[in-house]
Image 1 (tube, rainbow, N blue to C red):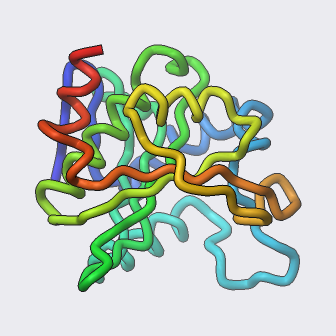
Image 2 (cartoon, rainbow, N blue to C red; image 1 turned 90 degrees about the horizontal axis):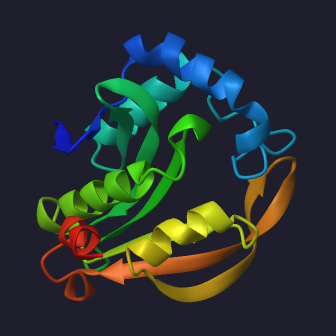
Amino acid sequence: MQLSYGRVGLRPLAPADARAWEEIRRRNADWLRPWEATVPPGDTTAPRTFRALVRDLRRQARKGRALPFAVTVDGALAGQVTVTNIIGGSARWAQVGYWVDRRQAGKGVIPTAVAMAVDYCLDELQLHRVEVAIRPENTASLRVVEKLAFTEVGYAKGYLHIDGAWRDHRLFALTVEECGAGLLRRLEER
């Protein structure tokens, strides 16, 4: 599945993205480090390479538990949006995480990509709620949920292992009832 809006696209993350993904991550290592999940000491289950990450995410996608998206700008890889922990049944919710190449930061790429992913989750997957967890210091990411009018729903101490330690996060959510005509339309109207 591929989604696009203007110059921004979402498509499945693929093994062929390895070179571009690794180059972007290497070039942005210092910029992403404070926000990126890390593997706690002793954990042997987390993927250690890009190819292992893609295999793991594709396995989860086949089971309907994840949507690993490559974010593109004019067709070139620019970041990633990953929908994880997709739950059906009476819960019908998922979590969204994202990162972007610093060269594309502040240009509306991630708000657009997140809006497309959330609209897809609510419309096509018939989810009821989507959540985003953000470190309190991550002002750029906080701006994304502000633009999309996510509601702050809580504070989670020691929520994710990031940059070598368990970090607190602010939690944000949107329900289908709050999205009206969709998040892309909301962005257009701002």
